[in-house]
Image 1 (cartoon, rainbow, N blue to C red):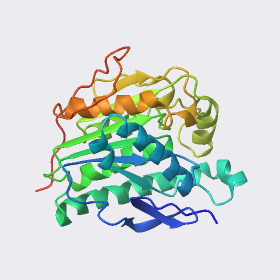
Image 2 (cartoon, helix red, strand yellow; image 1 turned 45 degrees about the vertical axis):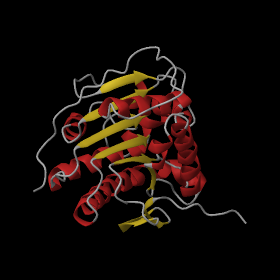
Image 3 (cartoon, rainbow, N blue to C red; image 1 turned 90 degrees about the vertical axis):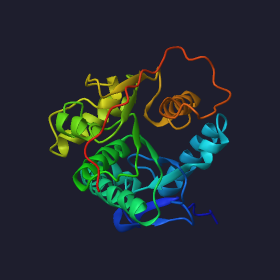
Image 4 (cartoon, helix red, strand yellow; image 1 turned 120 degrees about the vertical axis):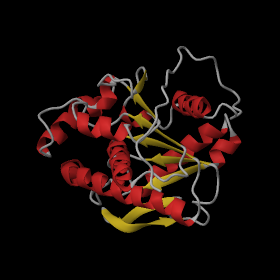
Length: 279
């Protein structure tokens, strides 16, 4: 019998349904000064998401065992129970991403009211999980960012987010201190399937994804091209883990990292002030 993996944080209630409140593994929230949260994308089973995220966490451990221990895996209802039907369910799962982001934001606020919460929160998201993460930022901006949260950064990998959705992108970026987009023009899913899915969902006409070319341009968004990567290859790519580690060290210069090769080019991240915080 295949073992059912358990996420550190789950927003799932089964069969593509969203839970009203998150479920946590023991001490998942804890009292660490930093938390890195990994968020999977579209049409990935819970077990598949956890396996890929664990592999990514292992890659982080190659550079910092401490950072790996601070890394949590979050799952949300981004897949459909009947695999052959899943692509056609994409419009519904966009709605799940929006709703999941709002629940995630409320859970973040609970961390700080109940356990104190980490001073630094870094969310690393993939595909439609990037939409979920941006919706979390929007909701956090509406609720008021907790005063104990000093640094909030986001890494968007292969973001299945419309590049022309300026309201979502700019307003969500205003809640974070840093936002990085990892993109690849070799991504067949974002090049072909994403524009069709968004059009069917009534979200624009054949729009381009942020994760294809790293558009739009803006001082709030740092970008890094991932040469040759297809949509599903980000979690397993060691360069991705290196970039995430470098970003976190940029935000926390005291973080000790090892086994990092000399980068081909510098990731230029601008740390920005954020919107109002909750009292």
